[in-house]
Amino acid sequence: MSSDQRYKNVSENTVYVEGLPFSWTEEDIYNHFKECGQILSVRAPKWEDSGRLRGYAHVTLADDKAFSEALKLDGSKAWAGGSGRQRWLKVTEAKSGGSAG
Image (tube, rainbow, N blue to C red; front, top):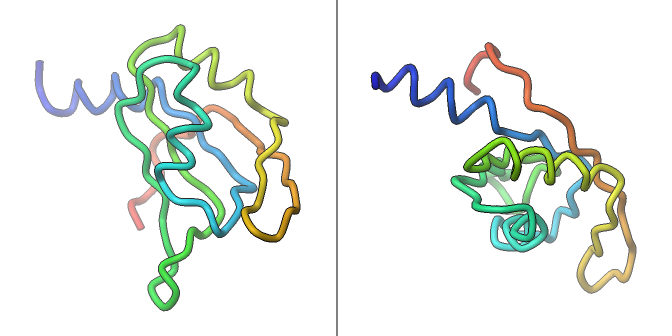
């Protein structure tokens, strides 16, 4: 299997998550999705000056079942650390073909 095919297979099981608390880490994201099934990667861009999350991430899951379970977390609550505020996450199928930033 070529690396392009592997990337295609991985991206097919990737969800896009927005609304993440800025205080969260990639580990917090992993913990939020771990009940869905095996997670292959969590990619969460951070601000260079503060190192905090930008509020969105891509989570790649191992198979279709885990991917389907992850999509069910759309609208799930995320607690924003010490502030005590809760946020509702938007979880959708990641779009492919965008430019890398």
